Image (cartoon, rainbow, N blue to C red; front, side, top):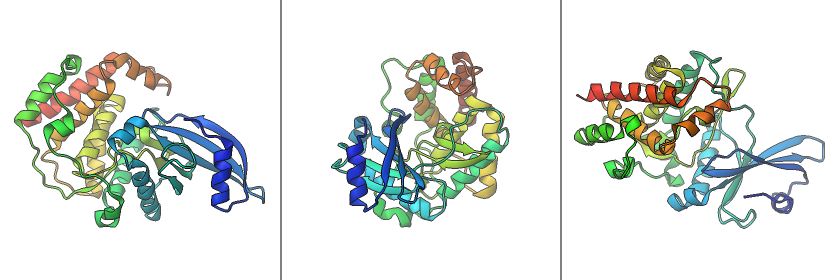
Length: 314
C-alpha cells in the first residue's frame, strides 16, 4: 500500500492548507497495517510530519470499522493528554488513499527492547496502562469499541490440529477449560488489546507513545495486564513482570484473583502469533540488539511463566 503525492495534495486542498510535500517514505507497520511517513513544509518554513496508517485487508475483515474506531479513540485520548498520535483526518471509505486509512501526527521516539531502561520500564508501562484504564467508558460509548468476548473458543480459538507442545499448548488449554470462565470481579475498562513493548515508543527514558489501537476492546483489565506480564517475562525476566503488576496495583487497585487464567489466555495468544516458529520470533529481537533472545530463551521463559500460572490454578 503506497501513498502517492497526488493523494497528499488532494488532502491538503481539502484541509485548506498551503503546504508542500517534501518527502514520502514507507515505515514499518507490521502485519496489521501499512504505514507511510509524510514530510511537509508550511509557507513559513515550519516542517510537519504526518503518518498515514492503512489497515490491512485481514484486519478490516475482522473489524470493518477499525479505521474510524482507532481515529476516534485517538481524538479522545489526545484530550486526556495520553501519549498518542493526534489524529488529523480519517478516510474511512478510501476515497483519497484508495483504501480505508487515517492520518495522524508523527510521534517522536522508537521501540526499545534494550536492557538499559532497567526497572524504569515496568514502572512506566504500569503508570501508562492505569491511565488508559481510568478513561470513563461512557465517554467512548459512541466510538463503537467492541466488547471483549468471554467464551473460551472466541478468546482462545478452537483447539488446533497441531498444538504447540514445545510451549505446552495442550496442557494450558486443558487446564484453562477446567477453570473456565474466569470469575469477573473488575468493572470493564478500555483495553488497548495488544499492550506490549513492541507497541510502545520511548524517548529519553520516558514513554513518548503507545501505538496500534486497532485491537481495542471494552472488557476485563486483567487482559491487558496479562499480555504485558508475559511479554516482560520472556523478554526481560519474571522479576520485571511481577514488578509491573505491583506498580500497576500501587496506582490502580483491581482484583487479581482471576489473573492466572488471563495469564494463560495471554500465553495462548502469543502461541498463536508465534505459529510454531520460535526462531523467526527470536530473530525479530535480534534486529533490536537483543541477540540473547534466542528460541531456547523464549521457550524456557514462556514455559516458566505458564507453569507459575498453572500452579496457581490448582
